[in-house]
Structure formats: structure tokens, C-alpha cells
Amino acid sequence: MGVSRNITLEVYTELETSYSLIRELLIGLWFKNDTFPVRTFYKDATNEDDLSDFMNFFEIERILNKRDSLLKRNEITVNVDEISEGLIIKSKILTNTYNTDTKFELYISPSGSHTLERFRRNTDFSYYLNLILPQIAKVGQIAKIECLDFG
Image (cartoon, rainbow, N blue to C red):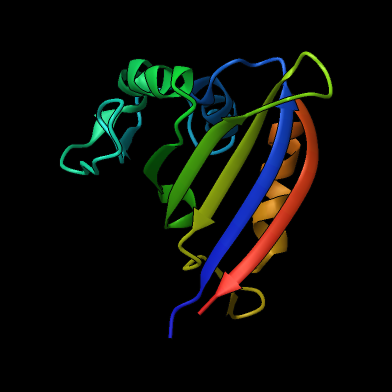
């Protein structure tokens, strides 16, 4: 039986777009530049799924920015060879009444297949949080962390 791990963060940052936030998360952590392949769930401002093509990450900036301007959720999938996993990453701009930063909901769903050889078991939330939180802290404040397992 599989387990779905879901990490949701509420982030306040000076970054203004989902593309910028996701870029800051992925580059430096698992990728060296923005030419890695991703799939975006949506190719335009509609909410009609279209997972037909892989594109380089830098090619989806226009799509994500357009969806941000319409306050729609952005969703991508990316394969991370370093941890032998696929990730689903979702980002949505939220209303911020606290300060002038942009407020995001950032959702990360790892496939959970990465194995910790030393312990002979699959990873838990701490493995992902120890990687992700310092990367996000470089560009913003994390106001909320929610971790859920399904399955």
C-alpha cells in the first residue's frame, strides 16, 4: 500500500511570483540551473489538465505568471534524480493583510520512494523538511507548516 506525503507551507516573501518561489526552492537544492524538465498541469489560464509535454523549467514562467495574475493555483511535476523521486509542487498566491510581502501557499508532495539506506526504511517528513525549510528560509518567512500522510 502506498503512502502519499503532503507538505503545505504558508510563506511570506518579497518574491512576487510562483515561478520565482518554486525556482528558489529547486535551484541550489536539486538543480544547478533552470533547464531541468518539468510538466505543468495547465498550459494556460483554464483549469483543464494537460500533462502531455515535458518542458524546461524556464519555459513555464509565462504560464505560471499568467495564472498568478488570475489568482489560480499553479501545479508542476518534476523528477529529482538525486533522491530518485518525483515531486508534485503547487503554489498559489494568497491574500496578505499582514504586511507588504507576497503570501503563498506552497504544497509539496514527494513520491515517498526515497530510501534511507542507513535505517532501511523509506523517508519521513523530517527528511524533506530538513531539505526544504532552509531553502525557503533564504527567501522568506514560513508562517505555517502542515504535514499529512494518506494511504
